[in-house]
Length: 265
Ligand code: BTN
Image (tube, rainbow, N blue to C red; front, side, top):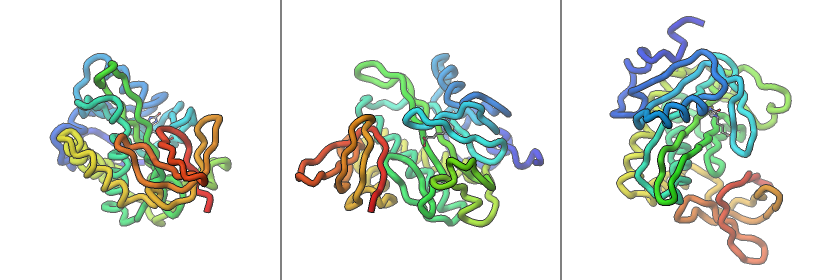
């Protein structure tokens, strides 16, 4: 692996066209989780757009208390500090925005179409290539900060046995290596643009972009594990706060705010 292949700040800055996202980068060879470091920085006043990157994570975290496979030098493990001026109840829309940005970057750089599984898993040919874990610190009426933790499987050649059915990488799906730096730059640019839209109040516009990129938005038969309780039904659009509406057999519509969505037909 040459230095040209590492996520070095000076290489990123030579290609990055953003106002704030990624202007301040902390790059590490090996960390527990980039989200952990980002929390520490945010608590100590790091500015919005500060980015923590690692070549490898030893305790990469996923949603729903899962772990995130973080092989050295092959994926993007990134945590972005955000300080949005919005009520905590709308923070879920930020999740959707991050997924749209990742999907746009993958299309632009790799020419690969992706599907977004609610809320923010990126699937290429049905397999997960990107996941997003947002963690936040809030006051009752405002957000102190949000950490948007983004993991992209870029150049992994294989995955541990227990992940092979669901997980893949852009290399495996696109049959070629991709530049992590180019992907990261396009992702940050796209995310910053959508984020600005959100901040100026255009939640509906952001959700429209998510719906255009997700087969899960409506008409998909799904089961949702709500952590103990399972519901089955057909997806019926997004709620105002970014939740997924699921219409059940008895006609009732449930708003899913967190949980694992599985397509079953
Ligand atoms: C998921 O789909 O379950 C979310 C995965 C998020 C993984 C990223 S990698 C960078 C950041 N640091 C972490 O520990 N997790 C997120």
